[in-house]
Picture: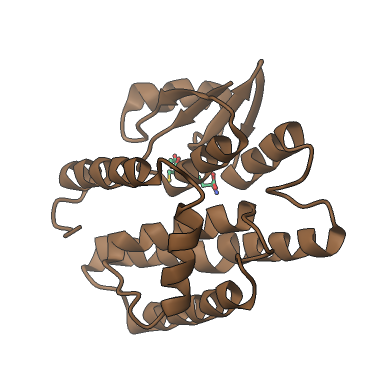
Length: 215
Ligand SMILES: N[C@@H](CCC(=O)N[C@@H](CS)C(=O)NCC(=O)O)C(=O)O
């Protein structure tokens, strides 16, 4: 399976972590969304030309949440990352939809504002705080964010929290999130190297594409 990906992209990071946890090796094709040739190659597969894009024996899947669901349906027969119990699964789904529609959405909006106006508006700061207050509640209700073990929801919400690095967001007032991050990342033996790769890739990306931003 090929994954068109760039480590700088949070949705790609999430899919890479899902694959790691499932023990699947993906043939990663580095795809830079600012390079015309890469975008042209990607557009042939995915008219939305977004990364991550997965190709499995000619079958193309994009949208990171859809890719993750495809991978668990194919490789997680026991339903570890995506539990089969409808009630537990509904909590995983709720957290995933919360992530795409609220948490990650506001993190991304914060980055957009920072890039456009050099600061995050008070209104967005308030929305972000509300999303993080909810996240703090979710991660302290159970051992992990949606169950008593790691699920897809932990991986995707971790991606959003990691992306807060772009905003140099201080998580001081969220002790639950900070200890949950340690617990989730401990589930990946090579997470430190993975995080280093994210930081280095993002630093380079910012130096080229948004040099005014401190990271
Ligand atoms: N909702 C999508 C977002 C994917 C996305 O927008 N990826 C960005 C990089 S982080 C991208 O490919 N942008 C290029 C484009 O939109 O042309 C997902 O979760 O996969």
